[in-house]
Image (cartoon, rainbow, N blue to C red; front, side, top):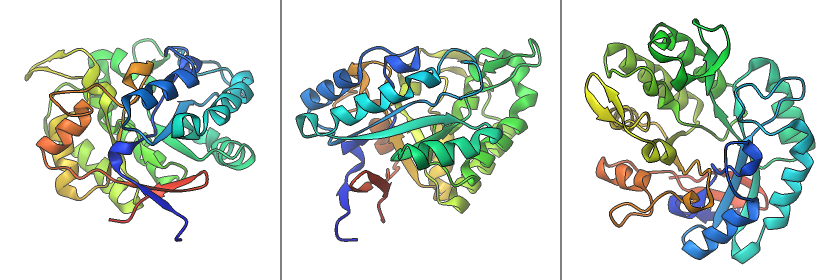
Length: 286
C-alpha cells in the first residue's frame, strides 16, 4: 500500500478526448504538451469513446475498432512526457450486451487502467434512431425514467471508475421539477451505495447557454443537481471532458483553473483525490 502515490483532485484529469473520437481535435501528444505548459496537471488520462467490435459508429463519436491499437500505442508513448503520468482509459456508453467486452478485452486483455461510464444516447421516439440525448428535444421528457434505469445499471456494473456527466439529462429535461429531482435522487443513491463517484463535467460549463422555462443556463453541470449530490454525501470527481488541447484542464475562470473547480468551491463541494500505483488508479481515502 505504501507504493500508492496520492494526487490532489486538481492535479488529475481522466476525461480527455482527441481526434480519435471523431469530434475532437489534436493528437494525444498535443494534449500532453499543453498540460505541461499549463503546469498544473501531473496525471492525464485519455478516455476516447470506446469502439464496439460489431456495431456502427452510431451518432459519429466513436473511433473505429481498427484504430484501438494505434490509440493505445500513442497513449503509451506519451507516458512520462514532460514529467506527466499518462494513463490509458476509455469512456464507454452503457450497452448491457457489451459489458463482457468492456471487462474482458479493454480492462482484461488490453490492460486499460480505467473505464468511465456514460449514457449519451437513447432511441428517439420520434425517429426511432439512437440519438444523442440533447438532440431528442421535448420528446425526451417521458424517457427520463429509462435514462435513470440505464445510468444506475451502469453504476452498478462495477466496471467504471466514475460515472460521467450524470446530469446530462438536464440538456433536454429543462425544468428542475419533482421529476428532475427524483431522477437526481435515484442516481445519487445508487452512486453512494456502489461507492462510485459522479463527475462534475467542465465541458457542460463550456457549452453555450440554453433557454429554459426557468431562464438561461448551461445544458448540464447543473448547480441544483450538484447541491443535491453534496447533501446526499455522494463522492464527486471532476473531469475536463476536453475535446481540444487548450481545454485539457478546463478553462480558467475568475482565477480558478477551471469553471468546475470554481463551481465546486462556490457551493462547498469537496472533490475526490486519487491514488496511483504503476498504471492502476483508485479514489483516495478521505
